[in-house]
Amino acid sequence: MNRNSDPFIGMHKTELDTPALLIDLDKMEANIETMANYFSTVNADLRPHVKTHKTPIISHKQIAAGAIGVTCAKLGEAEAVIHAGIRDVLIANQIVGPHKIARLINLAKHSEIMVAVDNSQNVQAISEAAAAKGATVRMLVEVNIGMNRCGVESGKPALELAEQIRQSPNLIFEGLMGYEGHTVAKPDRAERDTAAREAIQRLVDAKHYLEKHSVEVAIMSGGGTGTFNITGSIPEMTEVQAGSYVFMDSTYRNVQGAGDQFDCSLSVLATVVSRPSADRMIVDTGLKVLAKEFGIPQPVSLDGVEMTGLSEEHGTILVSDENFSLKPGDKLEILPSHCCTTVNLHDRYYGIRSGIVESVWDIAARGKAQ
Image (cartoon, rainbow, N blue to C red; front, side, top):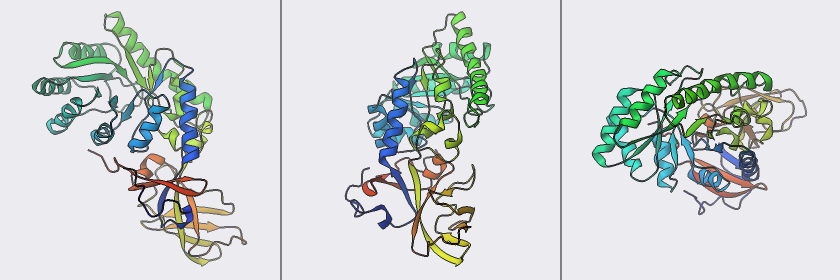
């Protein structure tokens, strides 16, 4: 929801209460345009991941720029974007159990939902539920291409599951999916390129195996922000699921040849709550508003300071510059080390343009883990 009645609209960002999750709208929109421009030059299309921003208005911006639809990690995310009018949705995950399958079938009555599968019993359960309600579900067989998370093995296991889908009532076999997630954050471009191409080759081999046995593979889906211009350049790939590019973070910023093509548009506004000594200050942004699994987040564009630790409600920043003047009540911005998990800790974004609050967006799919 666009909260344009919010009293902060029109104010300077430093007037916001903290902690506050900020989007630099100019940078975000430039990131969307940069990614769209790349996909206008290759065979593959962009199907950006909702799990990064969890907000339908951003998905609509991505689609307006040329994306063919969206990717979701969870049913709750899919419900949020479908209820907001987006129809072409891939859930790049296995939907298992009668309650979740019932929700999936309900979504299929209002969208062109597509789901990843890697299990024969799951395929049968979804088929039976879809047939009972007169719905149709599109499916991608997920292939394990080296991440060793979900997915069947390439070759005969992928073929057998594809054949089952083709023979099952109310299901449509669309193609294959694989995620080279173990490669996307490798900083070195050459190392990442080699690892990603090796992984995607397993998916390509699966496609050729299925086609050898007269099974058409229309969709080949995979990729992420760190490999968008590697996976996206492979002729057999038809869509890429990059998500983090819209915001970026300090981790992806260091991924050569990919992360350095986008600006960091997301930050968390913090207030200095204590300056107990000249070499230490404390801010009101701790673990409940900043994720740290990829490293400690750092202040934006401030020399002579380093955030060294996070507790529940506090961040500790060491000050090495004796002339550093921030005091209690002053504000600064923190760059997340992982945008996706940081976003999920907040209820809303403040959209900033030229320092002024332009819009306030509820994070509709925040906490949608089911």
